[in-house]
Length: 295
Length: 254
Image (cartoon, rainbow over all chains, first blue to last red; front, top):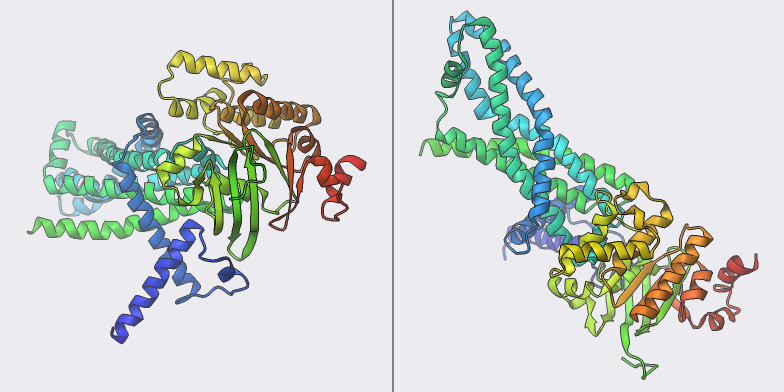
C-alpha cells in the first residue's frame, strides 16, 4: 500500500468502526473504555461530522430496505400524508399567493422599460416552475414539517414511547420513520404544484389589474415556455427535497438523547440541516438536468 | 447454567453481564436466575443500573459482555425478527408509563393488541379493552388523552396496556414511584393478581420497600452495578450491611 493510500484509508476505516460503535452503543470490551481519553483521527469536529454522515447514510439505507419489506402501515401513511400535506395547505397558499403577486409587481418596471410587459406571464411561469415553487415549498416544509417531526420523535424517544412501541412487537423504525419519510417524499411534490398554481393566481391578480388579460390566456402564456424536462426537474427536485426533510428530521428525532434539551436540539437540527442540504441538492440537480437537456 | 432450584424452570438467566455508557461503567458482572411464576425484586440506589438491567433483558440495549438468556434464547444474539417474536412474550411497564401522547387511552390499548392478535375481530377487541379498563377501575377513561390523566391513572393504564397482551414475563420499572399510598397499594395488588392468575414471571425494579415486601418472592440488592445480597425480604434485611440498612431504616423506622 502506498503512503497516500495509507493516509486516506486508515482514517476512513477507523471512522467506520467509531461510527458503528456510536450507532449501536456497543463497546468491544469493558476495559477498553475505562479511564481512556477520547482519541480522534483528525479533530473532534471533523470526526463527528464524518460519523454523522456515516450514520445518516446508514439510516437512509435502512429506510430503503424497510420500504420494500412487509408489513406496511397504510393507516399511518395516510395519517402522515394528511398531517404533512393537508395541514400545510394554508401556509403554502398564503406564501404562494404573495410570492406570485410580489414577483410580478417587482418584475414589471424592468420589463416596462423595454415595452415587454406582455412577457410577464412567461417570465413568471419560468421563474415559478423552474425555481421558486420547488425551493420555497421545500424551505417552508423544512421549517413546518421538519421541526414537527424532529420534536415529535424526539419527545417520543426521551419519554420512552419509542421503546414502548418496540416492546409491543412493532418495529418503531417502520411505524414512525418509514411512514413519515414516505409522506414527505410524496406530499411535497403535490404541495409544490399546488404552490405553483396559487403563485400563478397571485401573479394573475397583478397582471389583470394592469392589463386586460383572461386567466386562460395568462396560463397559456405562462406555461408556453415550460417543457417536459422542466416539469420532470420540478418533480424530481421536490421528491429529493421531501426525502431529505423526512430522513434528516426522522434521524434527528429518532436519535435524540439528553432530555428536553435534546428535544430542542433535535427540532432545531431538523430544520437547519435539511435547509442547508436543499440548497446543495438544488445546485447539483439543476446542473444534471441542464446537462440532460443538451444530451 | 447451574440451576440452584432444580424443581423450578429457569425463565431468565443472566451470567457475567457488563454494560457501560461512554466512560461510565453501569453493570459490572451481574449473575441472576429468575424462575417461572416468581416475583423478583431488584432494589438499589438511583443510578445503580436497575433500569439498564431490565432494558438488557428486554433487548432494548445490547450487552457489552456476558449472557442474557430469556426463555432459553440469548437476547444479544437474536436478529430483529426473532427479537420481535420474543418481545411478544415480554411485557414492560415503563417508569414514566410511556403512553402514546397522540392516542386516546383506547387507542393506546388497541395499538399492540390488534398487531399481536391479528385474528381478533373488532367486537372482541372492544370487549377485551373494556374489560381490562374496568378491571383497573378506569372504565370511563377510554376516550381521554394521556395528558388528561393523573400520574396514578397513567401508571395503571401503562400496566394494563401491557397486561392485555397476556405476557409470560413482566418487567416493572418503578411501578409505584411518585404515587400515593392508596394507588401504590392498588398497583401492588395488581402485580400479585397477575402472578396468581396468569402465572407470570416478573422482575420489579423499585425503591419502595412496601411494594418489595408485598409483591416479592426474592430480593436482589444492587450496589454500584453488582448484586451484593440475594434472598427473601426478611433474609435480606436481617443483614447489618451499611449499604442495605438505610433502605429499611428510611422506609420503616423513621
